[in-house]
Length: 137
Image (tube, rainbow, N blue to C red; front, top):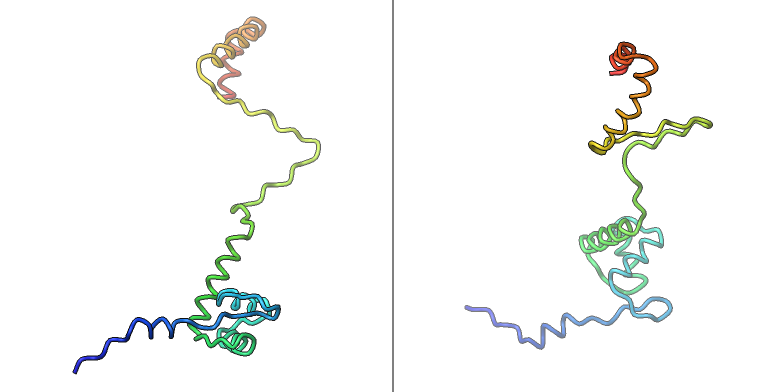
């Protein structure tokens, strides 16, 4: 024998529940009720379900409470400031200035470097400049 289909009106009537109201008389959602239970110090889904039953007259299963709890936790983590990962930079030594970094920018820097070496070659000589370059290079 086939099952009788439920009438559309009976489904909607069963789905509608009285709105939840907190102590101040404001209408709240189930998620907000779970957040209030968490802020009251409840942690276990069973404790939260008991709290919801006593405070709001709302019966909620433990898996549903757990789902609302995890959503609230994710929402709270999303609003937290995230710190950068990795090592913390070392503290700077007072009075020490690191030499500036020289970055090659193409042919212009090479020409400037060669122009700066010309008086050095004139002063020290080619052989000494070669030895300096070998020591540094």
